Image 1 (cartoon, rainbow, N blue to C red):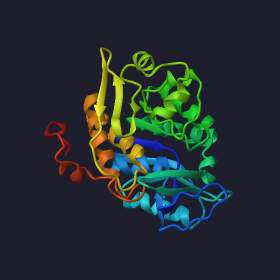
Image 2: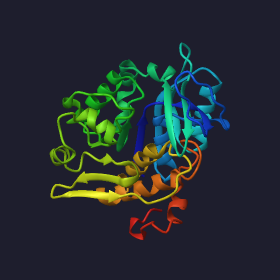
Image 3: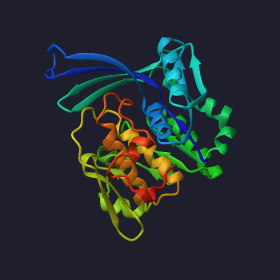
Length: 301
């Protein structure tokens, strides 16, 4: 089985549900509070693993109860945590999420995720060569991401870069990425002087732009391919993008065409928003097969 390495953030999500969105300086009562596992790196690793991927995680957690729970959750989801390092100088990362009218707002406190530096990547660089695909996001230091991009490019290791949360990156790094998966806002930061169509045409089968409830779009070398989403009533949209990326990685390594892989990822994302928490609704491959939209030609085991 082909192997995926997710390099990125691990955190605990502190989630508040409210029917009233507070204005600046205003205090309101919420409806509920929960703690759930999160971090874009961990989310994408769990999403890929539940869909049958052979997944390892590389990142840092604090030497605290949250770090212990994060590692336990990875193991419970069959994600190899050998490269998840507890550090003493920082607390585990956290995200503070407010759910309001089927949408969410998030404040991220990186904590130990910022301890994943270039030195750590240098120490385990040779390990990257055993993987068929590496996935990164933007919740670890940018210099760390650049070191990963450069190493994967030199060693010809396929790399998926989900540039979330949004931040700018020099164009020279984008040219070294196998798959780039921004949403519309992230796209506008990465390509400030480009229209969507012109950027897609310059990056055929590489740039995949997610469009929320509309689906995702890419250029296949001949024409733009708009892959529509599957319409559902969402309970919690947190983690939908992470589910998409984890599912896309698994589908690509299973040999699906990029068009079919995006369709598969769209279906996984649509199922994920029908549960609570970033990981709570992430589907298993069995649940995917139970969907009326699952294509038998995908032929997952």
